[in-house]
Image (cartoon, rainbow, N blue to C red; front, side, top):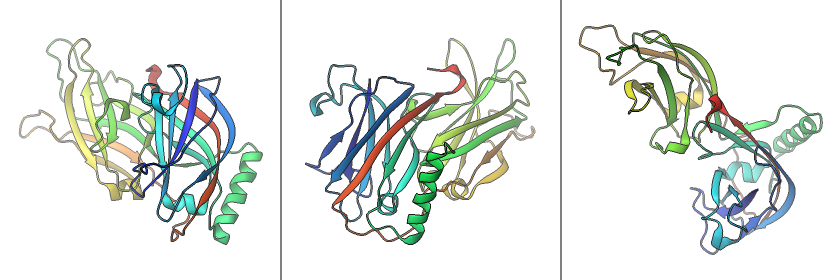
Length: 292
């Protein structure tokens, strides 16, 4: 029985002390939760953000005292720019589960939108009414294509390599996405597309491993894509480090595509707001690779 908590936070996403807490009713479905719930979130001032937290009411109620006891289904922070300009679309949730892509659809009325912001919002609302594809923020599209010259890490048999991606510095188990296993250990091909929850300034870390069932997976190589490349987008072969290969052997490389991440609609100066209207529409959850 998922529900959403909305709280005012500072520009870094830290919940304000003594700040207000706004909660939707429970939704009946976990996979395709719908709320259609409108609220007026007070106390949102200059430079503030909005934090959306989705939890499962598996304890018995969604009071403040029991929030931390209820299972976390994901969270996301809406930037000061989006709070100011307004937004209608999806936000990708962080910490939604291992290899899970989950999205929260919201509509937030801008406090001081420009004519360009108003035009964008009108277009987004029209697309929503027509059943079109919603806007998406806090997300980056990553395609892991293939790798070459990997080592065989198995003493018996052959390696079954997979590639994992995570935001650099956030190695929590619940903030990682991975490809299926490949059968060609030396030159695996995945061509696997995924959505990775990330924010401006985030770098992406790619780690290629051998799926060793029953024991710790061996690392076949890893590489970090800097934040500026994540933002601009790139299609390139990246040289893997920590491959375990001997000197003079062919270098192991990973071919990836990262779409340029648009994190903001319109970059404008944030002005004072005392109340912002928020509509929590729905959560759409997609589980990759049949991992739950």
